[in-house]
Length: 386
Image (cartoon, rainbow, N blue to C red; front, side, top):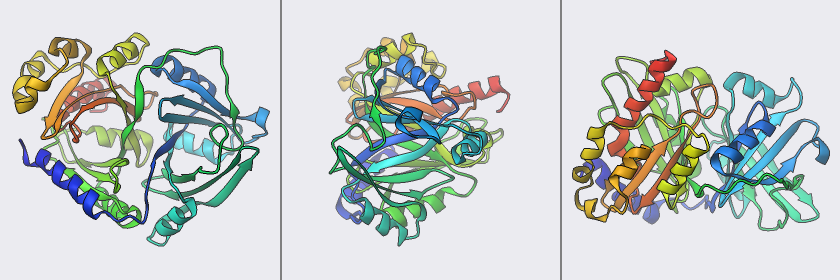
């Protein structure tokens, strides 16, 4: 087992034993994407990924500046927001970045305290603490900027019993596609510019009290043509994990450089969503039209038993089935994991999704990096951006 994989356990133990607790996070509350057409995007996420209609805010509810559709699948909530005029700040964001993640909302017990603790440690204000009320109670929200124009919103909802947030109404629809088995957000990955990874690692350590429990350099994450570096940040209870990537020098343009070019800055590269049955989930998603990266070669799957080492006898899934679906396998000391990555879900080659099933493993598929990046490079070559 590699030193990198072994470091996962040590790193997690360090987090749970010694991480600062000034910012207790209960989980991911919601993820808000700014998109060019929220109505059509909502239909896509319902049809393709099995999300359900949940809440709505727009002209009919008194919102004159923007419209938002909230989709839900198990513990995952996606908010799709579109401006209603050309001079909106939301519109400026979309013009520059295209469709992408604006807000990563974190569920907290005390939003004011979370805001105060992070601001005094150097965070930049996005939104001062705000009390939002309706007939179902109140929600307190406050926001800070992280990398690029991305925002962490602290959400305190212990005194709220309505649908999503004040200002939203229940969104009921006759169109109710079946869920695809997506359970919760496992992690979210950010891409930052040249030489910026350690800056943001320190920011998460100093401002949010996170720990860096896993690191990969360009010697571990590379192909013949490109490379990148990555560090994984986690909060004290391990519920929130934010890997941070930056490009590294290679013969050709890396996927991180491509993202930065088209997103025009740092931002969220992908959202990893967990499932308890990746074979069923990926089979459904493929049938619904979700496009995944090209499948690894035959040699990759022949090498799986050897790469899993002592976990090979625990593999419950049929390797041939995994091969046919293009699902990748990796292991660490705690167990194994299964993962697959979609192609970008908008026209710019920026945001994509990862589907992951953990069978004990705490890592992020380090053994799959080479096969994954070669697949991404094939897509880059097709786009003429490699």
